[in-house]
Length: 391
Image 1: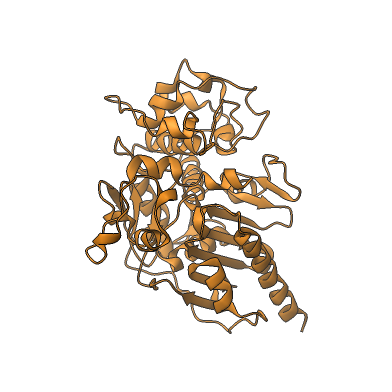
Image 2: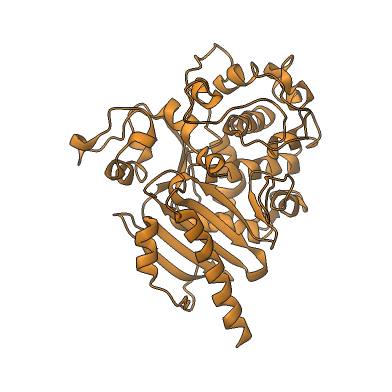
């Protein structure tokens, strides 16, 4: 499971990034292209300034003039030293929004409310939501349509048998190896794919993959397939993902700041990764979901979209856990967007709760138990709210 969660960034990072740039600490810049080998100090810098990394190109997700309010609420008593918790997590930012009000907001690592921080695989849930918008707008007729209806370049490949729904739930049955310790894995070879004129680099690689098992019969984490979802949305809508995200959510819902979205080798947003936004705007995305996908009085996604997207659609082999439409699900009704190095948006509809965190864990995944500690923190917040409600 930890390896699956690690998949958030790496196929994007190795492709798009070389070394973090800074006019302030140029003597500390990494020489390699893999974020896993950057020092902690280099990551602290780069994660809040990813758009300045050499050779990285981004599109702007434009915000509008009206900002969705997140008023200050009563401070929440968690019964723990939150600063110490953040230090152990190496959180750059932590915000708790409950019933639409900020109950806690803290920053560290030189990061603040005015800055952006990279999302890694949290972006997958953004991309999924754009699929919902495209269905609502009529660009995607049905989730049961074959993927090749929208990406003709995949015709004649293993994706002939795969539906949009199966792509969303990572149950395509197409063979994929996301082992970062294996230089011959797909996630490594994908990064070396040379662009082909007139074709998205994701399509160029993914159409070469063989079938493993029948479509719909097995869940397998594949960042490459999330990148395909982004290509599908752009192909269906005729718009860039950044422009569509701005049009459907960022402006009408009232995000406070522009975001940026990193582009791949052929100029398309890396939809499995790499949105950079402010902490409060990550929380606003959670609030948008809690509000049923309504922005500026209009429903952005179909009425039943989030009910399906945020509940278990695929068994991932962990008790009480599952996978929806690019969301990690829990059997208690809560769900989350997650990215390596500690990025996350946790949403609990029962308690009207959103917890957003940005950070730089000591390692990409969880060998030191930081992920388990974060899960315990979520449960602690839920317990604190239940205690309040019982008074």
